[in-house]
Amino acid sequence: MRMVDLIAKKRDGKALTKEEIEWIVRGYTNGNIPDYQMSALAMAIYFRGMTEEETAALTMAMVHSGEMLDLSSIRGVKVDKHSTGGVGDTTTLVLGPLVASVGVPVAKMSGRGLGHTGGTIDKLESVPGFHVEISKDEFIRLVNENRIAIIGQTGDLTPADKKLYALRDVTATVNSIPLIASSIMSKKIAAGADAIVLDVKTGAGAFMKELDEARRLARAMVDIGKRVGRRTMAVISDMSQPLGYAVGNALEVKEAIETLKGNGPHDLTELCLTLGSHMVYLAEKAPSLDEARRLLEEAIRSGAAIAAFKTFLAAQGGDASVVDDLDKLPKAAYTSTVTAAADGYVAEMAADDIGTAAMWLGAGRAKKEDMIDLAVGIVLHKKIGDRVQKGEALATIHSNRPDVLDVKEKIEAAIRLSPQPVARPPLIYETIV
Image (cartoon, rainbow, N blue to C red; front, side):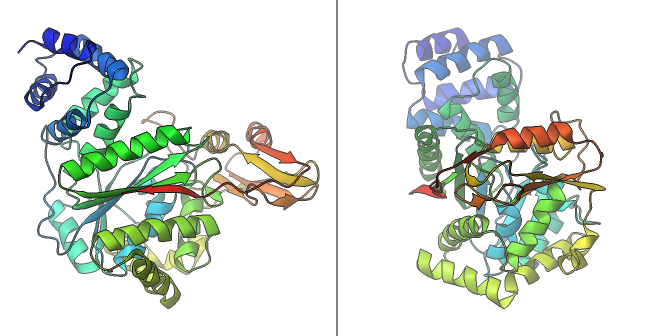
């Protein structure tokens, strides 16, 4: 085979075979295919797309480019959950212990985040002593004992995807549904999941701004999962405004704890119950989604969910007493309030701009070398559709610097009021199975 011929084939709109895709991925991973040729192929895919068969073949070729995590010694159906990201997306912190509390094994491999806030691991490290530096044997032992453990992502998984993503990032080929779908699914499959629940975000704070784009991505990922033998489904959920009220690492941990106790924001609770029901159902712990939801609601009511979170934290070195004393979590030195300039109704809460404001405070990373301030962030007090009075608090800024005028102006511009009542956006647009 010659790479130039395969580039031409895709340029002309023809489908590549499984063998050709495997040859390309293998050659690019080991350095035999140069960046300039892979860039040309990525651009051809960007314009010509890929068939479902091609996308599945690309996914599995990237899976086999490195190590695959073997979770076969963990009892039960291992269900992973992936979110395409957003602002205030605290679902993993809630879902892990929640579904574990009803007997579903959660063997989660997570990373550190670039963007508005840290990733799941960064957030959990707000808990004093918590760490993810455990061996794979210890990881598997903890899941078998407690039904939940989280480990950091290893560099040995999907090296082809890491190399290709870095190339796409500098060649304007990131926004390709087949390339996005295969990138996400290759990591989920390599991480050893038997079943995968996908939370695909849409709206101003999401990667997929338009519902049709989110729908196409969700369908592509569900198709990949099914083609390679994984039980897979997707929920398309709203990210036109931040999920929950907290945006920031320790602040989101607090909100997750309140949600596990049954006192969380309605939207965060509802999305976690929806995603969790699918996880429990795919894990064959309930005969229907309704029964799965009932089990999860009972776990919150009975205290089993928050107990599972305490056990999980303690097992990985964390101070589980933070659950009962939230003041033990990192706390910012200063708070400042953003207030409503007039009476009215919240018409818009631009999630991406609010996330950017949180990153300016130090809650997230603009580049991977940046240090995160776990204490800082933003707590919102309103949602789209809520009525407000002039002078009423719209948001509280938690900062470790006294001057936050830039952040305050960013938030004020992100929250638009209307004199007329405004309809609340739907939380969940559709489910794809």
